[in-house]
Length: 395
Ligand SMILES: *Cc1c(COP(=O)(O)O)cnc(C)c1O
Image (tube, rainbow, N blue to C red; front, side, top):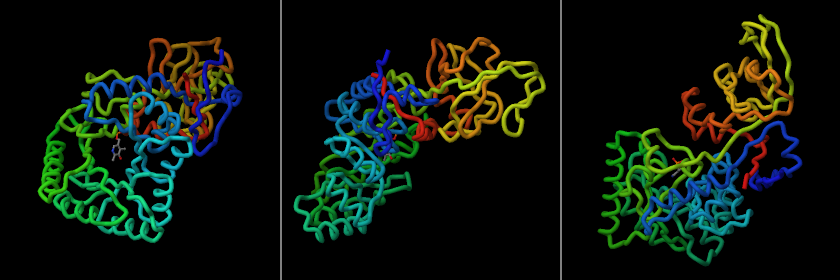
């Protein structure tokens, strides 16, 4: 019966053993076969020139960074992307040797020392930051050149040097001791939109910046531009590396990109029924009595709440799956528990498994469904599940 293995990557070693999982009231299941399938589908889109970077920032979008990174690398990815230095260290401590790009900005001596020590690869966003890196590495007599990645702003207006100044910036970094330019990259602001005009303008600016760098006699070693949406949209955006997050986790950045490849959601959220009771018509349910039973009904309490990452704004708006049926949630979602109307399944038992996100039989509830109800994006839904929910890897 125990066909599952506990995931190792619950933030910073907060592991649960198998017994702990079975005694849990709620958990997140990670389907490693789906993850591997998604990575293979993505690799299938790429020419042999292009490598896949699996973006595993934010604990792999809530999926557990170390286990996801290992599976992605085994399935065809060759780079990893993280947002912060501690995220990179967590992967190294997990035994991962693949190249790791830190997508966020780093400045402090402590960050730079850790980058050098753990062989992480920083993003350089400005001449000032490049000088700080060079000086800090000089002060510790760092011996080998540190691979650094030059970030250009081509229209996202987030990190990076303006594309018009690309040539000068790259020349400066090339001239600094201890630093070696490993790649030049930029990030797209509107790649998930069916209207590609802004994306094409960013692409044009990126090409102009590269031409400028080449005109200075510098041959860029490696170029990258595409996130999930751009990877699915146009192979002209693939360059040498694609940086893919969302699609690795089995979600489409936009409905219009669904026909490109077949992706399978990796994450499911489950909890157990902790109590069942019958309430009379007119009875109020949960804080504020925001739900009043219109007639006698069978109520089940489920052991998961907003402190686990089920958004309170979904109160009275969401459904769950029990025995393959869609069951309405009722009353305000509380910190650790929520209630559902199980009148359709009167013989429901305490301990039965409830699927909040995922599939049961023919029914399916996706992160996109929640995102739509909450007027947000699936990225935010995935990142919202808290570490109180153990991540369980299903092999
Ligand atoms: C997060 C991130 C990505 C991945 O984006 P997805 O849309 O999830 O594929 C790629 N590049 C950068 C710079 C990022 O910050």
